[in-house]
Each structure stands twice: as C-alpha cells, then as structure tokens.
Amino acid sequence: MKGITKTLFSVVSALTVLAVAAGCGSSSNGSQKSSGKATVTMWSDVSGDAKTAIDNEVSRYNKSQSNITIDSQYFESNAYKQKLQIVMGAKKGPDIFSNWGGGRLNDFIKANDVVDMTSYLKNSKTKYLPSIMKSVTFDGKIYGVPHGNIQQVNFFYNKSLFKKYGLTPPKTWDELLSDVKVLKSKGIAPIALGGGDKWPDLMYFEYLVDRIGGPTVFQNIQEGKPNAWSQPEVIQALKMMQQLANAGGFESGFSSVGSGNGEDAALVYTNKAAMWLMGSWGYTSILSDDKSFIDDGNLGWFSFPAVTGGKGDPADVAGNPSEFYSISSNSKNKDAAAKFLVNGNLDKQNVKDLINIGNVPPVQGIESQLKQAKGGDYMTFSYDLIKNAPYFQQSWDTALSTKTGNELDDDLSKLLINQMTPQQVAADMQKFKN
Image 1 (cartoon, one colour):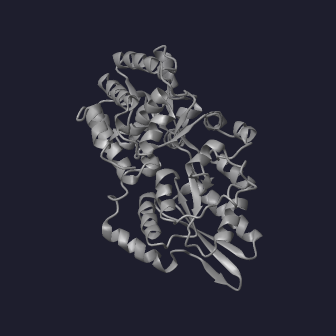
Image 2: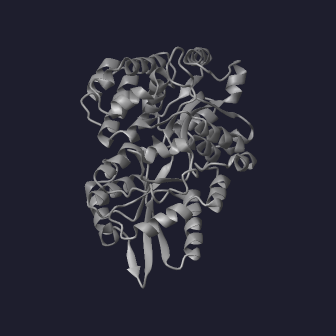
Image 3: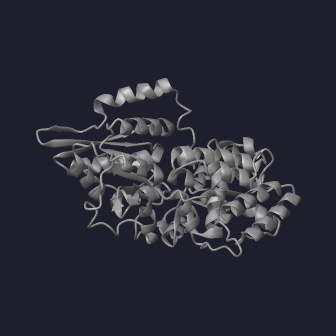
C-alpha cells in the first residue's frame, strides 16, 4: 500500500537511521513534567493540508488546557517508519505515535510497548466506524484510535472512454475481463498499474482472495495455520491475477511504471488507460494533477467486482482503514495522552477541517456533511462503502509482518510477469511465519 511502501529498510541508509535514532534519544518519550504540567509528544508522518488540520486541532486543544500541552512532531513517511521501529525497540517511543494498526501494531503490543486504551474509551465506543476499529483491537482490547482519512481501495475509471466504447462499470470479474478485451481491441490500456512500486499488485490479490473465499482464508494465513498459503482460494486468486496480466489487462511495461510518482494516474486522466485500482488517495492525486478531469465529470469509481460463485461478500472492502494514534507504554503521561485522544482527536472542528480538504474521517454520523462538501459524491461513496462493509480487509502487507509483507509484494510482482507460478508463490510464502 502507498502508505506502507516496501522501502522500510532500503530508502534511508543505516547511518541515517542511526543518526535519526540518536537525534531522538534525548526526547524519545517526549514527556516532561514541570510544575504539574505535562508535555505530551505526538509523532506522525502526515504533511500538507492534513498536517495543517492536525496543527489547528492541537492548537485548539492546548488553548483549552492549563496542565497539558501537546507537542505535535512530523516526519517524512519512510524515515518515520524506520525511526518509529528503532525507538519502540529501544523502549523510548513518543507518548503518542501514529501507526497503521494491524500486524505491525500487534508486534509492538506483543512486546508490551503499547497501552491498552479500552478503559479510556468506555464512553466513546460509538464515535468511530466499527469496521475501522478492528485494526486496533486485539483479544478484545483496543490499542488505538483513528485519525485522518479513510483509505479504502476501489476502482477509478475514465468515463469518457467507457462511454466511447459502450462500456459500463463491471460488477463481476467476468465482466471486467470482457471490458479488458474490448478496450485492448481499441488500443486503450484497460487498466493502469504502477507495478514498479509492487504494492499496487497486492490490491488485486487481497480483493480476489476475499471475493473467492471470504475473510477466513486470510485469517488462516494470519494465524499461521499449516499450508494456509496453499489454500485453493489463494491459488485461484493468483491464477486470476496472472490471467488478467496475460490477457493484456495492464499497460505495456507496467512493471516499470510508478505509482508513487503519479505515472499510473496520469495514464487515466490522459485517456491512455480506462481503469485504475487504487486507494482513496487516488481521487486527490488526480484532483491535484489534473483538476479539470474531475471538474469535467470524467472520473468515475466502482467497487471491486464480485467473483461468480465466490464465498466472499461483494460488499467487503480492502485497503488501509485509517491511520491510528496509540500510546507508548513507556510514556510518563499516559493519562494526559489518553485525555487528548479521547477529547481532542477528531473533534467537530477537526472533522470539518478534514472534510474541507477532501478527507473522509472515520467517525459516525457525518453523512450530511459529506454530501454538502465539494467532491461530496466520491466522499459519500467512500464513507458508505466503509460504513456498510461487513468486513474490512486490512492491506496484507500491513496486517502481516514486515518481512512477510515485503516477500509477498516481491512474489506478486514476479507472478504478473510470469517469473513465478501461483504454486511457486504459495510455496515461497509458506516459509514465512506471520
């Protein structure tokens, strides 16, 4: 996934990592108490308008408090992931740290590095969308609260190309393959894929596994059950991915096309590709790069198609539910940190600010605000998708361990260019413990 790109241990050099770790050492837990006042350090990797929204939220909260100050600090995404991993391992995490829930958060929980927030949230259980909270709930205990934007994955499509060739958004995988055949015959790349970044490939796999077999298939893998990677549903999903690629479903040279740099999105708004499977940030990406494409009504969207005969509910959703705030066990200001997360995080003004910048906050009861917002049609689609989802499949490379997720991304990229068979992928993944 874009938010969890696989450069965790490669982008920044080891020396940089050590320097970062050393730099945070003096204020790693950020907690300071002086004259009864607590300074709570909060780390995240947001930027741009989202950072401004948090800054405003924190400023409001700090002005309302006489004994608590939130010190919000921001880092570049890849550097942040490395820095967080290091300081948590050293038991020197900040009071509050942003994370993506799932298996990586659970790794910290298993190491006793995260505060159980269940008792703090006893009066605010209904604030957040239930499907979102599953990513921070382990053994019935809640270890975080969401912030920012819902990040589900869905298809975007070029309406003008669909209209030109008499197509409608596919509701089943068979219909998708039929559309691919038509578009390819017209010289249009059916689907844009930023395969150079590898993580976009995973979106197809996790959706297909769920559509074919339902949530149990992934849960078997996550629980490390014997031969879980060789389940028939996994093999079938891998075969269908390869079938799509071999049918010319993606643009020529897709394995060298980037997503983080916007190359895949550009194929859609320059009329070179008709469809694009991407996280919700794809909307704001196109809005930023070619606003007129959206203003002219050329961008459409639809849910991942059903698989005929599949056991999975077509209403299930995959992606990154949200980013979350959790509290470090080493924090000296746990109560003050929890007080901010319960009362200050995603308050009414923050929700309004986020909607104004095109984000969909994962809180309940904001339907009317979304409908009235600019871009409200897509925001409402996103919100309803999550609200009505029987199951939210967190992106596998986030839900599983870092090592497993990295290997899966690598294997899927090889599968799509026929360097591995479905059976070889399954056998390789079986070597990993989750």
